[in-house]
Length: 248
Image (cartoon, rainbow, N blue to C red; front, side, top):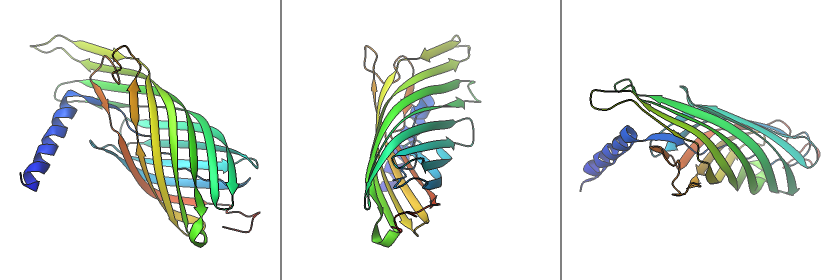
């Protein structure tokens, strides 16, 4: 099979999936800050795309070292239509020269809505997400120009999914709902490069979900799927780069 034919087949399969199923969740990628000290403030702005079916968004993350060990963080993103997500987290950090270990606990909520103008079908995805996240990396290596690290988030999605199909000549009206919790594990990789204050950022997030219902199906009882990958790029500005410790 030629590359063009293979590509067309993939596109057709993706369209078929979207026609029969709706996307209920995608990885939520918040910037991992690697806070080193009290008073350090980081602001990030990014654009992202989820795969394989595509869901572009813009987002921002703010992180702050409130004490010598306590950090707080807030993140929001929006897909430009009827989808948005926000989370807040608090945690602890410990730095050893360039190496940083962070741990956060937080709470997120979000949702999305899809409408098919041709069929009148409406799918609504709302969910709450309590989570814990562990992060480790190196900040300010290569004379302050590079940050790199890994993180993993674990939590539970409490969904409220509604699939409304209006009546047609062939089928009666159908309303399907799912509220079965779903367990979540999200590893994330990030890379930042640039100056000591302003850096370009790259993030890659992956979601693995497990259903908790009797059939162990993710989003049990409703025709919905999730996107496993999210990639985003953006910029991060650090307003207070190790002022007490003489720079990175």
